[in-house]
Image (cartoon, rainbow, N blue to C red):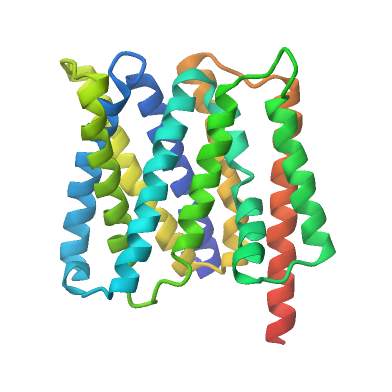
Length: 293
């Protein structure tokens, strides 16, 4: 059976979102019984080894980076370290689906950040969608109400760091392999985890915990590779909206693994964020097609 490039890209994007969410579920499970920074360090070692082997096999390690490229990779890695700490700390204390719902506003924030930092043009339709999406995030967080969870603010902080991470590498030269960038971030996160164990402590790892950490590391690598493959096979404007399938996986895994289900207002806010994000991506796709024509 022949599969079109767009369909192949869509399938890889769905696979990527599933893999990242399974990784999150593994990490949430393990950090209930193991110190957070120890878990980050152990998963990081697996990710570094896996990405290092891929980089070596593809020749990415032989490519020399300029000083400007190294600075950009370093900035991205630092932002990734902060994003990881904020995200996993929030994940330890709040439902998986709620945190995933907050992270769905990331494409909207990236669009706004690109306009502020790089002068990208945003029409009133996309700007309105961004504001509506942010309103959806506020519905999920519900500050000042009984349903407010202060750890949700760490989720917002993590999203902001991810936005900074992605915008930081926009000026990166195209010859720099994606696996090199990911490897730099993995090394930074692993070092942060090892340093954090000086304060967070170190505990004996049971076989079950070890398998969960191994699973988290392998699914993290699979998610990264699938995401890169998705963007290379399919049209970005068509494939990108399927990143929102991660919310469906988060709801399913949260229910099955942790007996957690999002409440009514979280579902309403999530729907608003997803709808605004999909509208923004489709609008951008339409504009790009118009410019190409």
